[in-house]
Image (cartoon, rainbow, N blue to C red; front, side):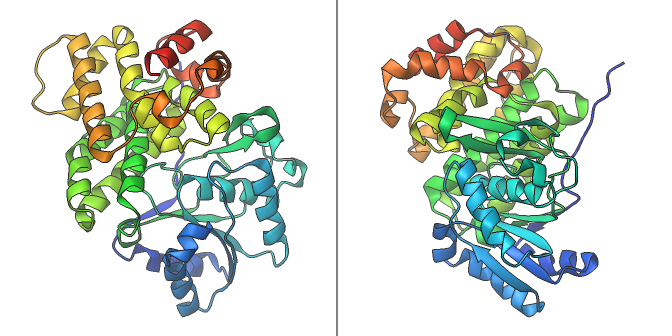
Length: 385
């Protein structure tokens, strides 16, 4: 008999000015000092300052690290850890997108696990011995779901690949999904990260590890994103729309962190490692191709997926259902100005053999419901070129 596990953040707050609840969490945990992890863009546009105001109001001391890079590397993690080590705060607050939260997770782990200071040893499942330093995640995007997951991804520059780390001891103790903060980000970034969340929903629904609990989360997430994606493009300041997308990303995170993903992520990771393509952009480009590729091994689920994308969809033809899903994804990409071909993001065709091999060796490949080989992945890359 198989056992299904669900691990996700202990407490989550959704809505306008949810950041005020940082003080609620700090008070009940007796925290007196914080280490804020963010990036320069988030700091310069004033978002980090909104969190600082909350800490000042609660008389919580803090230090800030502002140098997280997109697709963070081992070196980036170690730089952040060195900054933390100067004053050694009670907890970490990650303010940013997936790269920021992933960096903060890695740092929170090595703070309490000195044997993992190389960072590379964290690759895989539950590699740490001790629980991570408490982390409060304040996502600025509705995309990665990293605020509720045990997953984080760090780039190994020496090996030109992304390391998938999955640690149940590194799940944030609290997630703060502040819609007023999310509404301040550029629209194109909002769209790319929403497509990232959509990919998490679709892949977790179609993964080998999916079960009734995760499937319900994944399908509802698809519906929420499908219903609100065009609205966020038209009405970017509508905080109700932002809240629905934030809930969708959180549900997607709850699902995929426990049941796995698939080859959209396998193929996206090398694109980021080789070319520094933003993760959400890579996922958005690849998703429609993989939906159609997987259609013949999940016929009934594909029909349910099409109905989640579009409640008016009718019929029991799984191929038509997959095509309908792909059409909707392509429509979203087009409306958001996201690329739909690899050539548009300057991928070198000569790299496809190496990209395919890297994707095949990625941890997410084994979660894909349809078995794949290197040649299958190569053909998919060529199809989307």
